[in-house]
Image (cartoon, rainbow, N blue to C red; front, side, top):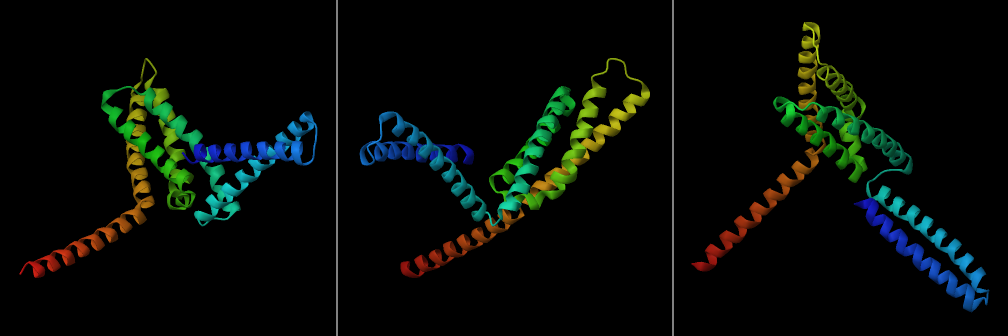
Length: 214
């Protein structure tokens, strides 16, 4: 959503810069139509790129990060996006009804953690365990499980390996739920505070109304 919004603003700024540059070149400096058009393209490009830098700076600043920190987080999120895509493909290759619901929950939880960090980069630090350890383990085990479960003939050793792998995937699924809860702790605390304030306000209003009604 932010990327789309930023693209629209940059495009509008670039278009305005193109038109303004052409008008100034053609009428104020009396350049030819062709030269004015060339200057306009250059001017629009400069405005487009400048607005991109300004919007990125404001976004980084609003999240309380430095540009270096934001770049570091952005690179990690790019890697995480690829890993989550691999995770989803592996999970959905296993089509047994027995594990379908759990696989869907794991995929949704991983995607939600990524989306929260993408929307508010500073949240990345609240889920470092997910990005540095748990996601990698999940991807590796899910791919291994999908591969083994697709084999037509399974030995006892393969069956045991499948059960152990599935059990570990389940445990990691619960672990990343905790990662998500940690990421949302501040929101939950804020919600509780706002609820307490709202309840106190309602109680004061009720008491005041009761006094006025006597």
